[in-house]
Image (cartoon, rainbow, N blue to C red; front, side, top):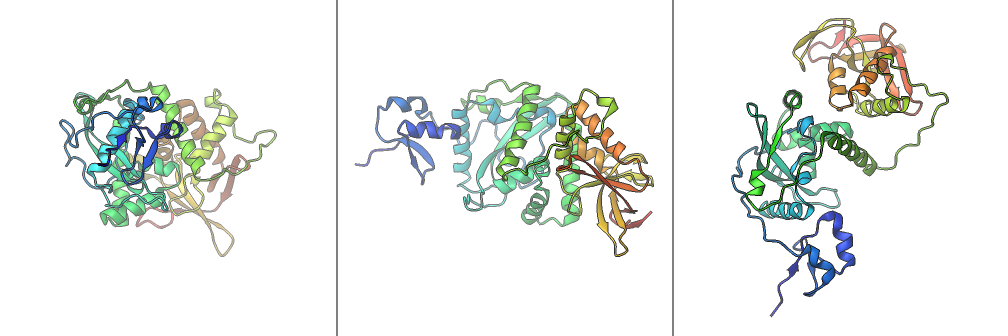
Length: 386
């Protein structure tokens, strides 16, 4: 008679340690086990009771399908994973992927190591505006591609916006215009929710026997967020070596003297890493006309800065295509500390002191590069000089 597996609950971060203590991996079950009973080095990972496939109060229809689901900045890293111990997270992750039959619940894809596509757990939240409570309503299994769409802000920071938007369209069938409207609406809702603090309600987990710990402090969440972005970028490949100029050429920001030149340069590196709407490097410019911003529903006029693209013309001039007002919104999305945020805006304004100019940040020389040219309104239906 074949002996039943002695399963273990081994968090991913502890797999090497468990393996060194004698644990073995079952690729079919995708789980670690003890090869024989009574191994003292593996006692800490002895299995706990399985979590029920339907959590108490869970609504499996809540938040179905694929959509941009941005977590308010005031809630960053107050998620389920940061509020349960690693062993309980492993039990939750296993339950989520098992009940989804190892398939993404949004697009139906399975895991593919060659394509670097994994199955990941994601939370669906309900926000009670009156009480200020963020209720956990559902846990869902998403593949890496769908999870990237869901966290669209992080995709933009990491230069994956185009891929995320393409995947959103593929799964939902949205045309480009509808997908862009969906993203804008998601960010508008995100800004509204980010303006307040939320209390986390994880009773769905505690009633299932999962131990919940206090979430990290706001300052710790900010550090964790920045560290996660750095790790994501490091995973993309080795960074380009950047020479350090002497003396530094970063523009000074008189209104934010508490920000060092290195901090300002790092923030500009981050903000300008996102490609321009039409592809290529991101530029900024000050349009000469008043406009109505579709993102903040306000009338805007110079000297507010717009995101821009710069192209050459047969005559050798530059064509500067503006998408008004989006520069301030783009900077907001990076959740910079207030002094750094002010310094970035001040440095950009200083770089655009010449009428009809556009500027981009050169991360190698660590200074702004500017050109002058013909300003064009790049909003849909308004393509042309103004």
